[in-house]
Length: 112
Image 1 (cartoon, rainbow, N blue to C red):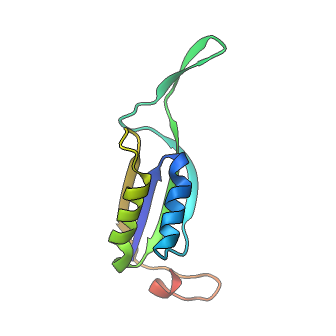
Image 2 (cartoon, one colour):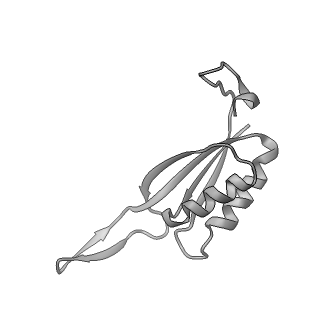
């Protein structure tokens, strides 16, 4: 079992969610986050004053998946979230040692 964490641009969320549903993904956790990478933020003009926005809005998706689904999920996110411009985001994959569904007590693959 793996935990896939994807940081994507907010306007790509609906496309990614729809594509993941089409490949059979049954659930995910979503967080609105702020951050920066190579973009280093940007400057904006507000009421004649210029100021620096250091952190940019992003969406953080977290998906617990069976090992056999990992590559398919990654490929789906890459295909749908990519714009080809700086700030498209990142995908991280980490091992999950144990999962338990609170409602039923199911564990591991049955709990995904």
